[in-house]
Image (cartoon, rainbow, N blue to C red):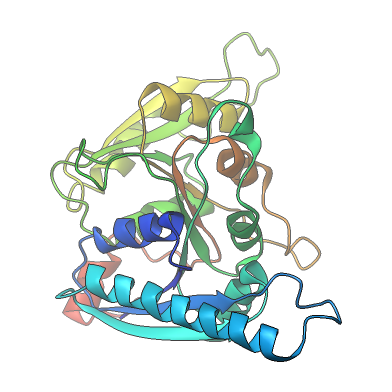
Length: 300
């Protein structure tokens, strides 16, 4: 059973995240924990006491119940086991605390959209969660794919390393369907960079990796692009192809750098015009992990 933590406060941004998750076809049952933080701004002040605070908290609890009811409706009839956790506290810190407690495989959270001068800004809650969560994180931005305006367009950053293989495998755990347009993109430095390191993978490697996804995404293809900066190359590709979702793997953190994201994942999260899926702290078992589980074979 796959374990997912979904953060919601009943806002349109949170509902976008829930709708995206509800539209992901899956074979195995999902244990979906919905977390809502009850937060009354100014509660750290000494004057916020008595009946006023109790009435604010009561309204927040009512809002949380409505938010969960909305999620229940979205997942009605799905192969999902739902649970609701309601905690008092600052939203971002509460979501991360619950993630550390229940240890989900994935945290899903909504983010404010990007446009113009605000492109480099991310909602404070989603930024904190994406930076501090101990597991993979999916940050959702609305692009129109869930509404059926067009088939889902996905780009997966791939260079053959452990983190990118882990991202590929996590993506393969969902059945994306025949209409999903998936591109595995490997970024290489332009030839004019006389001291540029050679590519870690060949075009043939990227094409073969894309073929491994054909069971869950038959249209998956691999390609290589040139850019002076890997993150910028991926972001520009996402912009020019109007991508809905970008998937990247994060290098495992050291003890000293646990609260810091890698430069690539942070750049993509801050600049991509689409949803971003960061694969983090995941063991690599092979893209056929699902088949092995169904057959009862060992993954060791």
